[in-house]
Each structure stands twice: as C-alpha cells, then as structure tokens.
Length: 285
Ligand SMILES: O=C(CO)[C@H](O)[C@H](O)COP(=O)(O)O
Image 1 (cartoon, rainbow, N blue to C red):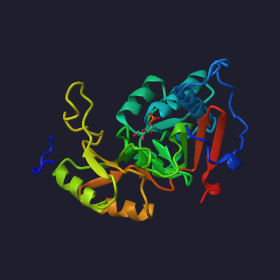
Image 2: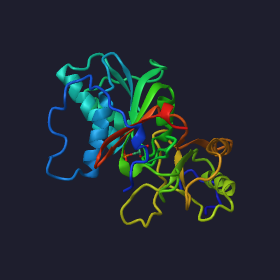
Image 3: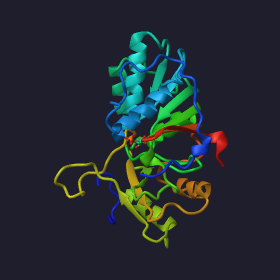
C-alpha cells in the first residue's frame, strides 16, 4: 500500500421459461455465422448475440455504442448494414475512445450526448449478469462513459455469451471496478477497503496497465477520462442490498463511478451452445 498521495503510481442458462423469439425486421446475415459442423467458439457466441441485438436497430435511431469484444461485433454489423443502405440516418454515441475509432472505421456516423441527450438504443456487453439482470461492467475500463450513455437510453440491450451469467455479481472471481480520481488514490482505495472490512476474502487493488515483464507493478491503468481504476475482489460475490452498497461506494469522495449497473438493462441476449435466450427486464424481479 502506498502511503503517499501520488498521481503517478459453463453454466446452464437460468431462464429457459423466459425465452421468446422476435421477428427479424432486417435481412438475414450476409454469411453463415458458424460452420454447422463445428461447435461455436466463445467469439462465435458473442457475434451471434451481437447480431441478434442489431436486429433491433432501425433507420433514424440514435445508438449507444458499447465497448469490448462482444460490442465490437455489433459495431461491425451496424457498419455493414449502413454500407449496404439497409440502415439510414443512424448516429452512434461511442462509450470509449477505442469504440469511437472502431465505429469511424466501419462507417458509423458519430455524435455525443451534447447533441443527443436521449439515446434510442444502446447495445453493449457485460462482464457478469445476475438473474435480476444486474450487471458488472468496466473490466475494459470504460464504465463511466458506458453508464452515462446507457443510463440516457430508452432501451439498453446487453449482449453476452452464456459464460457471463452468474448467480450473484462479483462472484466469478474477477473484479468489480471502481473509477477513482488519481489524486490520493491510495486514500480512496483504503476507504473502499474499509467499506468491506470483515468480508471474507475481500481485496482491493489499483489496476495497473498491462506491460509485459513488469510483474504487475507498472504504471496505473488510466481511463479515457484520465482517472484510475480500483478493482474490488469478493470471494463469494457481493452480499447484501446492492443499491445500498452502490450508494456507500459513491459517497466516498474521490470515487467517480463503479461498475455495478443495477436495474439498467432493458433486456439481455444470451448466446449459448443450445441457442439464443432473450431475458426481458419486465419478466424478472
Ligand atoms: O464493460 C465493458 C468494457 O468496459 C465490456 O462490455 C465488458 O468488459 C465485456 O467485454 P467483452 O465483451 O470483451 O467480454
């Protein structure tokens, strides 16, 4: 722990009864998504979920463009449909600089929340999804812009492969990210740690930029907003009232936002080896 303030330091789908199908409003995919004879890879499943979500995109829409390897498939598909002339007059609001560059490269016209304070449809991936459609997002580091844009959306559709479904968020052994300002980040980290004092197996760590050979002690990872990320680790997931826990985290001065997206998803599209399941917010607790 740094004492000095420094600015540079395969599970079953649990909702089979909620499965419904939609009538595709757009032409079929240009090429087969998966060779029929081989089992789909995880990336195939991500693409299948993404293409299913893009079926919801209509001409004239303002779109929230997600970040990550699953959302990237949606960007490619939207770009493809724009180039074919199937989609017209759509604009996309990117949730990260990486997405901005990708969207521009595939020909999606870009905008922002200044010009469009209401977004028609956002499509994005997630790191974890619980049975109530609460999410963990931000392991790619884009949680703040994602939460702003997806929170401004009439409809927020989450796209995942089935490995992202968990009984309890924070329980997959991976981090729940919290974006913090660089100033005195160690102090903010300690305050986050004391919030979860007594939680068995809890840990909080500053995220470092991935640099080969530095033993994980390299420069801090810096978000698109110039902030740092503190990753929270829970041994058995986050227990208790998630809204209350969210409020407690956000009340710490120095915290900008966290990666729990509670009650925000309108629906989740889950691609698995046995097919696609769509779970709608209205059908869960
Ligand atoms: O929240 C995110 C980025 O901040 C991503 O949506 C999340 O990490 C999922 O990524 P992937 O689709 O690559 O698994």
